[in-house]
Image 1 (cartoon, rainbow, N blue to C red):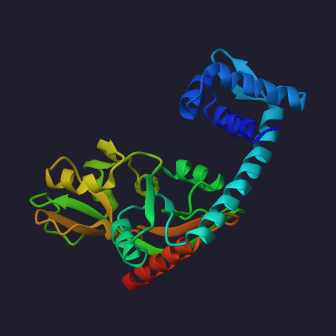
Image 2: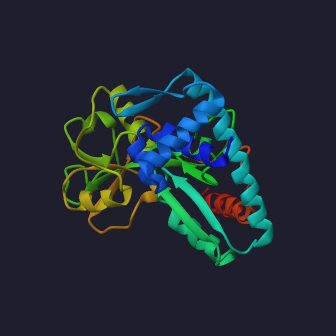
Image 3: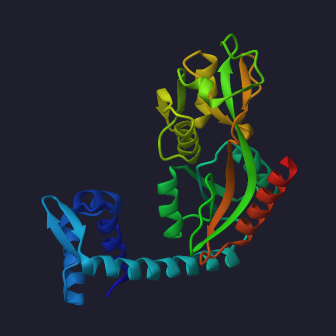
Length: 291
C-alpha cells in the first residue's frame, strides 16, 4: 500500500466524483482511477459503489476512510513538528472562523510578536469548519457557537451580546432597547443559514413566535452594517462587530438574553507549533481585555 494511494482515496471519498478529485489533485482521471483500482485490489474489496457518474463509499470504504484519515493525520503532524523545530520563526498558521469580527485585532497583535509567520484564514459555516477541524487541517477555529466533541478542545473565551442594528431614522432609532416581538414585521439582512449567529437568532425569533424575513443573505458579516446604513433592512449584530457608523443605532434586546459564545477550538491530537501556542495566548489576552 502506497501513501499516494491513500491521498487519492481521500480525495475521491470527499468529493465522491473522479473528475472533481482529479482536478483538485492535478492528475488525469485515468491515472486516478487506476490508483484507486490498485488500492482496491490490494485490499481485496471494492471501496466505492458506482452511482451514475458519482462514487459513493460502501461499508468497506467507510471503515477504511477512518483509518486512512488517521494515518495521514499522524504523518502531517510529524511534518508540522519537524518544520517547527527546524524553522520556528517561519511557517503558516491555519485558521477557520465563524466569528470573524474580532480577528483583525487579534491578527494585528499576533503579527507584532511573530512578523514572519503567515496566515491562512477561511470564513466557513459551522459544518464546514468542524469538518476541517476533525481532519486536523487547521490549527485553531474561532467559533460561535462553541462545539464540544471527544477529539475537540473547546475553550469559551467570550460571551458576546447580540444587538439589533437599525438605520438612523428608522421607527426604532430613538429607542435603547426593543423586544423581539416588535421586530415581527421588519425586513432583515443577515448571513446565510449554517453560520452560528444566524442559527442562534433564528431560533430565538421562532421562540418569540415569528420567522425573520430576510431580504439579503450573504457570507460576509462585515457587509451587513453597510446594508443597514443604506436602509435595506435591520440586522442582528454581535457587540464585538459593532461599528461606530454615524447613521446606525444599536439596540439591546430587552425581553431575552440574546448572546453568543465565542470559543477557541483545536483538535486534541494536532501538533501545535510554538507560534500556534503563542497565538492562543494572544486570543486569550485579547478577549480578557474585553471582559
